[in-house]
Length: 156
Image 1 (tube, rainbow, N blue to C red):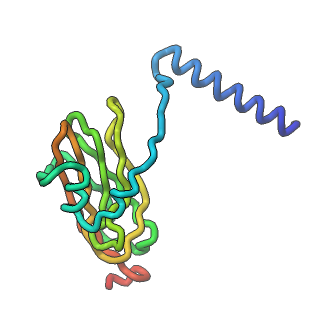
Image 2: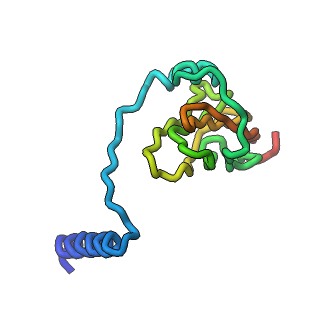
């Protein structure tokens, strides 16, 4: 089969699938836009400095924020972390690795209607707390999880 024909058929099939899902209401084709990231936030050296930059002063601990990460990471270069917020009107989720040279790992502004459930892989230089900072309904909340980073999986 001709490669350009194959590409054309694949594109037509994808369009047909999305059109069918949209027709039955399972897929809403809403436009998504990327904003320029705020480089200043990534210069924050700790949680309180980041809070100040975001316009807050304190963050309350919340059981409505779940951090899923391994208790022991055998490879600090790729540590899987998931953050889920069950707080109503979640507007922003930021993830920090407290003892990294640059603690802020990611910061997401969420549009209304987006499910606040994120998964990523982060780099950890050493054993540290992973902190999820969530802004919901104009207030800040947080959760933390200790992740132990071992060298070669030796438990050290």
